[in-house]
Structures are given as structure tokens and as C-alpha cells.
Amino acid sequence: MRAMVLHKGAHRLQFEQVDSPRPDAGQLRLKIEACGVCRTDLHIIDGDLTHPSLPLIPGHEIVGTVAQIGEAAGGFALGQRVGVPWLGHTCGTCRYCVNNRENLCDDPGFTGYTLNGGYAEECVADARYVFALDGHDDPAALAPLLCAGLIGFRSLRLAGDAQRLGFYGFGAAAHILAQIAVWQGREIYAFTRPGDTAAQAFARETGAVWAGGSDETSPVLLDAALIFAPVGALVPKALKDLVKGGRVVCGGIHMSDIPSFAYDDLWHERQILSVANLTREDGETFFPLARRAGVRTQITPYRLERANEALDDLRQGRLQGAAVLLPSQNA
Ligand SMILES: [Zn+2]
Ligand SMILES: [Zn+2]
View 1 (cartoon, helix red, strand yellow):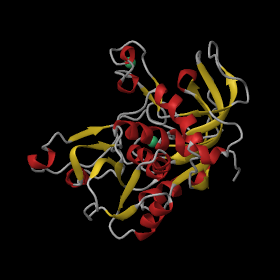
View 2 (view 1 turned 90 degrees about the vertical axis):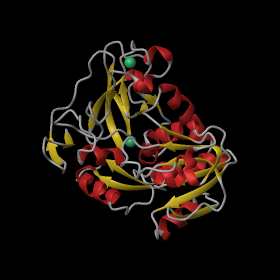
View 3 (view 1 turned 180 degrees about the vertical axis):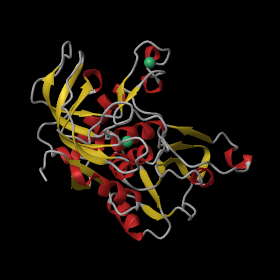
View 4 (view 1 turned 30 degrees about the vertical axis):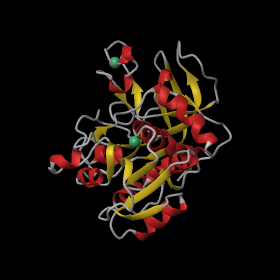
């Protein structure tokens, strides 16, 4: 099959022919229809996340159909549309797994990081971490839901019942979460790179009541701030935008260092927390909710062999919404 592969010491992906994977017990083999490009893929390729299993096929926003069912991998039918997220495996026995906190598992497997992912024509996946998806939707439009949507949704959950929400960074995750939050009757305040008027217009079109630069003070005090940009300096900035008791939720897996700030900014029970991975329960709640809320993703499609170009466009901030690779489109 055709695949984009990351090799040791390389910072670009290589387009290659590799053997098709075979499903072990408990796994499914999928024919991949679409795979989203997530900022975490950049952090893996750039070496910010330091433990990839190399050589590696990246990609953890996989939409495909079931092509083969491994021994004891129940619950799915051949040809069924499914999705594979970032969390691809857990041990099932550590203290976190047995206490419904499998997102914090001590011995996890991550799709497109420690397990081969979706920048390819096929993949295998642990059937326990595969979600059933609607067979009628456009697979490319579904792909960003698998991480930007799903882990973004976990961030939104951690914001509690906050009515006035700040989104810092308005890319793939924010554009999905804004639609859900507006559908839930909340107000979104969007903070983009200073001067990025296109992103601010995109945020307003997606339902934000206000959009401006991340260097601007929020026009109202916020109940919670969700930080999607990997910029640690936004944390103390967002704290200053919060009501007493408000919460800053850091939604990314990697962030630059957080500068020091005055204890006064944290005072009055303000909180800062990070979001790690996802649970299956997040997925079982999120996918039906996204459907009810009528979430529409904005995507830019790329053929598989153009993955490096998609990654560059993400890195340079040239995308509005999400980049998606289409492995089934031939060169
Ligand atoms: Zn575990
Ligand atoms: Zn991701």
C-alpha cells in the first residue's frame, strides 16, 4: 500500500510503498477514506514529542471502512464506516484504567505516534478504540471530529457549565467546538493571532459574538478560557480575562513554557488545567452530540502524497478549519 512514513532523523515524511498491515487478535483492518492532519502531527515530526515508534506512519484522525475483522474483534461488520482516534490502546489494568480514567493510562498506545496511523491506504486498529460513524456523511468532513472535535470536546467538558467562553486559537478544534457551544446556548469570544483578520472573520461566521487579537483584553470577563494554540504565554493572559472562580483549560498536547505571573492573577480560586487524551465515553457522547448540533467542518483536502504540503500549510497558519488527506484518491 502507499503510505507517508517518518524515519529517524527526518523532519519530512517520505512517500513509500509498504506492506499492508495484518490485524492481530482484537484488531480490525481498515481501508482508509480520509485522515485529518492535526497540530500534534507537527509536534511529532518536529521532535517536540520525543517518543515516536520509528519508522512511523502518522495520523490519528482516521475515517475508514472495515476491510478485515481479526480474531475476537467483535461489534463491527465488514464495510462499516468507522473512526480511529488518538488513544489507540490502553492496558485495562492500571489504577487509571480501572477508575474510568483510561485517558491517563500508564501503558497506553497512541495512534500515529506509538502505533502506525492513518497517513496510508490502510491501517489496523484495536477494535475497543474504534467508533462507529455515519455511513452517509462525507468521510473527509468527519475526519477532524476524531481529534480536533473529540479532544476539543473533552476540553469543553472540563470548562463545566461556563456561559461565556474564550477560545484562544481559532483553528480546527475551535471551529467545531464553537458550533457545539453556540448550539448549547453559550457565548464564544475568539482570540486569534494579532492582526489575523481572516481568522477573526472566520470565528464570527462560526458563531463567535466577538473576535479579536490575543493581545486584546476580553470585552467581558469570561467564565472559562480554552487554549488551543500551543503558546504558553496565553495562559497568564487568559487568567486576566477570567471571572473569580474561572478556569483556564489547556487543550493541546504540547505547549511552549508558561511565563511567570503574579499570584494575584490566580487568586480567587481561578484554576489552570490540562486536557490529556480522551476516553471511550467521551467519544460515545461526542459523536451523537456533534450530529444533533449539526456540526459542519470546514476542510481543505489533499492527496496522500501531498501530506508535507498540508503540514506546511498548518504550520504557517494558512488554513481555515482543517487539512484532510484522502488516501483513496490516486495520484
Ligand atoms: Zn491502563
Ligand atoms: Zn490530534
